[in-house]
Image 1 (cartoon, rainbow, N blue to C red):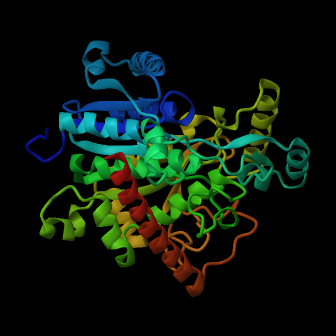
Image 2: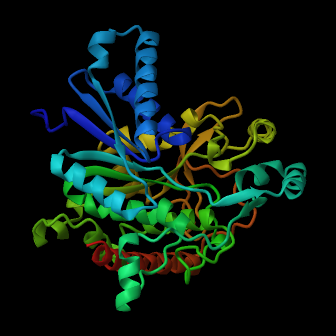
Image 3: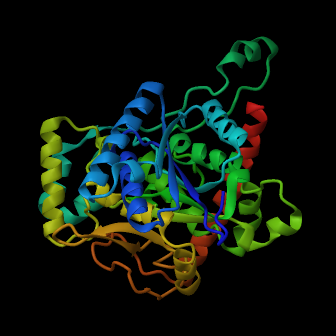
Length: 430
């Protein structure tokens, strides 16, 4: 629904992985910044996803508590302001594609426009920590060690469970082809969201924003272009985040346009889908380094990990919000900033990776982040205002014409392979 001036009266945002950590903090910050910046005639509809009903109910309860606390602290009218926010839980397990499809069908049946989606949910795929290597890394270069950690022990070769278990015995009897393998981390962090983007395309308007969550650790050594699912790479989590960077940063280039239009095809006319203005914008963000359950540390190691993160910040690291609420600023900025602001910035200065940065005392802000092979904006030698040029990856190389061309070629290739996977899995699931 829209007002007469074109602005929506209800602003609907879907956030995945919202039961804890960064996802929950994103929902809290969405509520706070919406109430502080939007007109009183507008309402916010927060759709938060979790994997089961009990987590969904708990998340809704805690978000309502946060809403009431925020209203009291702002001296607002509890009755009036509380009606401006609708909190609703939905269920999806991104490692189970049938639940992804079920969520899409549920939302399509309603027909409500999605003004923003924040693809936050994901798995790390770590089985432990090399404490000796971690201690040495922190003692020798704490900022690099805590921004681009290389001491987590990954589980290599993790595969998702079969997506069509009911057909397994039937396939064995008939000799039908077995379903293809899916990397578990790839499925939860990228492909589940990719399919959800396609299936929800009819609910996007041209001004809608598809916000992907990346990481500071999305560096090239962990990614293999011949294994985009990250099944055999050393660190599938970092591989999935590099893949996310490649997909989003190249999503507005002529070389990938045909694939992006197929992904976002909502059965509009050919003329409408050919117009770039009719395509929702993909935005790349990262939360910096935040202390969340993703690391799966015991309480003792969690304490020392957080202490190391604060020390890195005090030593002038730009990427240590630590508090998930501070880390949520980039995703919420991407969702709630004025319709013209981000598009104009990326038209003027080039497409960027927007990160949650902080000062020494924890004052958070949104800043452009360097991406290996792309730079800050996809233009060789250009560093736009608002870019962070400290705390960069030690293995970085300055972007030149060759590395920029290689990045674009990798982006085109992963878009092609992702579209092929989408078509293959849509056929399997149907």
